[in-house]
Length: 241
Image 1 (spheres, rainbow, N blue to C red):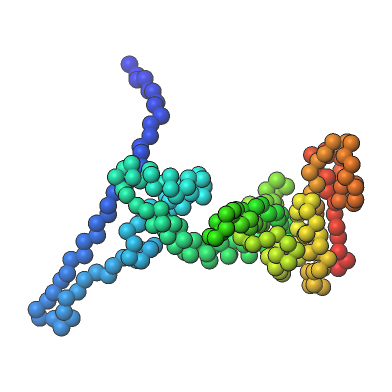
Image 2 (image 1 turned 120 degrees about the vertical axis):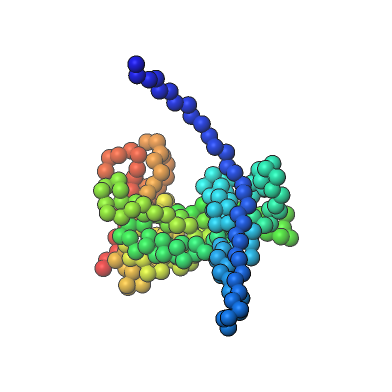
């Protein structure tokens, strides 16, 4: 007679649990080794109460799903787990310490690519003693060859900095000699003018945000472009190698 099959979308809510590790002690009357016991398994946070899975959950919730730590504290409290926000902040810092080597490797990989996109965005930072936050910068270093079938995988790494001046970006790009894709800001262009002879073969591709036909902006960054695509205007600055 056959059968009918139906499907219903379901969810299994996250479950908080306590993992107990029991390490028995063994002794031998005829041995000289005394009492023996299995070693304590290493933890992500030495002496801490959080497992690697819990710390990962907190970090992903904060940075991938934009769930602040104070909200996560409230969610945990709703499930009977009462923690201070400072405790979760300590977990995040420790996770960042473990991931630092991976972050540095990813940043080196990006800066070794033949083409790199670089841009900055303001980042308010709490500054004790002031009535307003201090405005710092998050610099994004990115690469992506997939749109034109390149072999390199997409990647992005962020560099925190106090400012967005020429010296700052020049320090971040030390040793880079490929094509640098930037926005209309003039700092990377000024940075190119101060490159060493070893870096002089680098080129800066300046992307200009499209405007209407009556734009009154002047200068080569706005008046010269390649191609007829109205979605992007670009000016190539090439150094003599």
